[in-house]
Length: 207
Image (tube, rainbow, N blue to C red; front, side, top):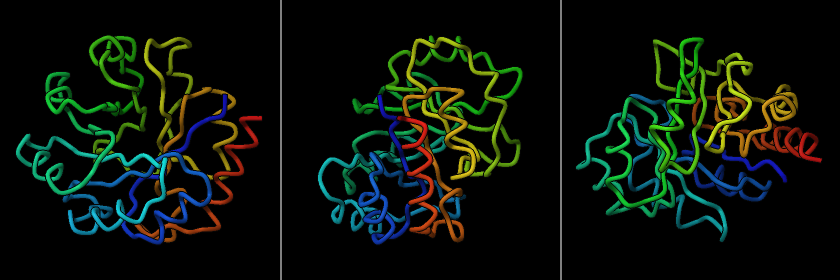
């Protein structure tokens, strides 16, 4: 099975279209004011309206209130919610939408327990642990910390780029990979050549 791809932190229509053209299965829109990749509802609506069919739109939230998420959902069509903070299972299920739960992984992380706690999630998104940020750090983590068999599909994130994505897929065999900084010119501004190189690395590993 080919490895799916999500390109996250999209802030411009042209970058969303480039991601779709190059074969990304999903794009990620960040609704978190502290992130340099944060988008307004207005910008998000324009990006979603421009997308071709069959590209999923994932909305990323970090410890957001229900009112905040409801306000976004009232204006922006999102296919999947991604919870990237300290949300509980109840926090994630109250919107009646498919969701992903991001887990910041270090040596003390019990991924088997997380898979049980968030068993209603479509997948667990595994990212590098950082005390300074909830994601988008550009750091990898030790992929050997991932148990051989989890009860949930894995979306691998954290420091992926064209140079390491093939190795990452061969080692972890995730359902999907998630990239943001690894295909950027600057935070929130994607680079078509880097996207192309990343997608080629994914294809090389999926053959």
